Structure formats: structure tokens, C-alpha cells
Length: 128
Length: 388
Ligand SMILES: [Zn+2]
Image (tube, rainbow over the protein chains, first blue to last red):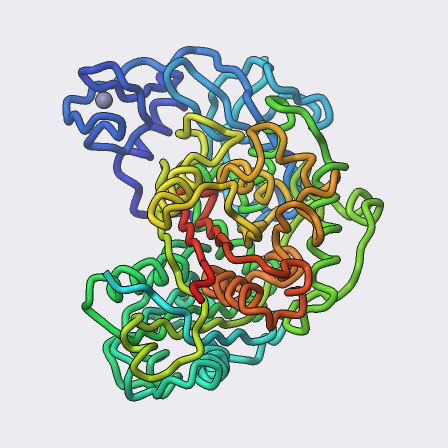
């Protein structure tokens, strides 16, 4: 499903991440969240600013998916992980390491690449 | 405030019947519910109906009025959508309406047609219960999301695939007597451990099947039940709903279900009971780990100990608190929009004493139903009690 019309806020975030300038949103009371968003989900503040995402994050949990949706048919098996980057966590596909050797605690950096099935851009977590 | 009586229940056999439409399934469940209740269709004042993937599976939106028609009821109807907790949400609203005197008789239920989509199509349809931008686009599937929670649980509290396997074995055992269950077949721990992996650490036998089916419940006020001399010994005495952030990665806990805890605490307080009063539970075990998270969230097990409950016999038929005597979503099946209402139907018959597994809860008076949506960003909990 390669969209001609983008997703405001989310595509901008992918663009920035592709250029090595990933960010998160911070409200005036210091809560972190991910875009696109107009309101801090934690406190309701509408004063949000873009802050640089820490360069590295840590895998908290992961899974290797063998039965994908049709949109990831040619990507499977692949690993999906949740990694913490300072005040926010993100979900992405793990690359740069054998699927068997992925562990919680591994250090990752965010990267944007395309799905083998659809050619759509998505977030990858690259193991250093 | 009126007591809310479960006047009658109806559930279709859950299973793989790709040719059957949602309206056919709900029509059948409603016939059974009306026959069971002795309530006249013309007395129904509202139809509240849960459904999740009707647009994808049947190219059908606006299902409320369609399903009222299928049930032969001429009353205003609304569809509820809260992913796999859709009919749980419908039940909560029905309870509120009857309590506040708005309605005396409500037909509430749900249906889902899924197997016509095939495994890949149904996997894709289920995935949209997650955050499309941040989760689905990263390749997260529904089993994948629960796998992330399972892995986080093992890391935080211990346990592993073998303990989870006992949950599947238990629920298959419970389904053996349930004619409406999708799988009436015993399995062993080894079967679960040797099954193909879906999303590590979860395998095929850790997962509920893709199912078609419907459930319907006729709820009435106490006054209506008295006036019409209904045989309706079970009441819904507590209702609670909890919510959480949509994406799993935005939650405070990856190995707990705070929304279910919130819903459970609210429902217990509403009914004036505590977890210790619960004799039997039907919980949302779409994956084996989901049952573990559910019984901990409902305080039926301390946090970190739910993983051993099935293995050590605490939640089996004949255990302290039997969980999922229907077979659960795992063996009974999980037509998502029908699930919450079917749990209430199972519990009501267990407590009435006319369920094939009622012998395991002889003398039981209090049951709890837990219905979860997505990765538990929505949770609905209901307490059922025998009132006579
Ligand atoms: Zn804030």
C-alpha cells in the first residue's frame, strides 16, 4: 500500500529519521511522546516541542514473527522489538543481527528502510 | 436502581463456517436467547450489538439495524466497536440503561464472520486493532503484540513456554464437554511446545483460532422479570471498564494489563465483592499469555504468579477458581465481536447449573467475565451473581 497522500506528522518523522534527525515531542511539563500529536497524552498540554531522540536505544522486548500479515509476506521471518529511547519507546523491525541472537538489552539505532514486500518505508532498529 | 437480570442466552456453535453471514449467525443466537428467556421480541426496547471487522469481512457497515432485523426485533439498534471487546462494551451500556430506568428489556450481543477472509486476511484485519502508524507499519501482528508481552513477562517474572502450554491444555480439556466449542479435542503440553511458531515465544497452540459465531443475551430489569414471572436467577451486579494507551510501547507496563485491573476493581466495587468472592471466571485468553495477564489483573493471582496457575492446578476444573470452563477463546473459539457476550452467556449457564461443566462449580454464586480489546487498550469486566 504505497500511499500517494502521506500521513501528516508521521511521514515528516520518517523523513527526519532518515536524515539522522529523529525526534520526539516534549510538552512544557516534560512528558515525552511520539508524533503526530497535538496534545500531550499524559497531561493534556498543547505546548509541544520537537526534541532530538537519543541516538541509541535499548531493546526491552522482541518477537520473531513467522506468520505475517500479507503486507509483510516477503519480509518474514522478521524480528519486531520495542526499544526505549530516553523518555519514549518505539516499535520497529530489528536488523543488523541474526534473528537467533537478538536479546533484550541490546543497543539499537533508529533507521528508515523499505519493506521487502510492499516497498513502504518503515522504522528499523539497527543493532550496532 | 434496578437489578439487571440475565433472562436468556444464546450462542451459535463457534467454528469454521465461512459461508455463513453475520446476519444468519446473529439470527440463530437471538432465536436461542429469546427461547431461553421467555421474553417476547415485541418487548425489546433496544438492540446493542458488537462487531469489529464487518467492513472488511462482509463489506457491511451500519450493522445495528441489520442485526435487529435479523433478530426479528423492531427497536432502535446501535453497533459497538471496541476491537475484541466490542460486545463487552455493548453489555456494559445495556447494564447502565437498565439500571438507570431508561430501558426494561434489551437484546445485547455480537457476531463476527472471519474465516471467509482466510488466515492472511484475518491476520491483517485483526492487526488493525493496533496503532496503524507505529505498530502495524512496523510489521506487528496481533500474535506478535502478545508475544512482545509474553517475552517481557518472562523477563520480569520468570516462567516460559512450558507454563503457558498448560493454559492451552487446560482450556482444551474444558472444551471437551462443550458442544459449541470449536475444538473438542484434548491436547498435551508436548503438542503445544512442538507446534509451529507464530511469533516467538508463541506457537500455533498458544493462539486462539479464527472463528465465525454469534452470541445474544436478553437482559431485563428486576421489575420486568418479576412482572412476567421470568426464571432468571442470575444478575449482572457489577460492571467496569478500563482504558490504556493504544500502542503497546506507550504503556507503563509491558507485562501487565492496567486497563483490566482498572475494569476489574471498578466491577468488584460496583458489585460489592472482592476477588476472593469469585468462584469462577471467563477471561480473554486470545493467547495463553493473555489468560495469565488477565487473572493477575483481576487479582485472582498475585502479580508474577499467574504463569503457574494452570500448571499447578489452581485454575483447572476442580481447582480453587476454575478459569475458562467454556474452553475459553483458545478452544471455544474467538469470533471477536461475539466474545464478550458469549462469556456472559457461559457464566450465566454455569451459575444456573445447566452448563455441561456446571458440576465443577456446584454451589457457585459469583462469576466474573473479562473481555479485552486489542492489546488491552480496552477492557470490560462484568460480575455475575446468583440472586435467588
Ligand atoms: Zn504533558
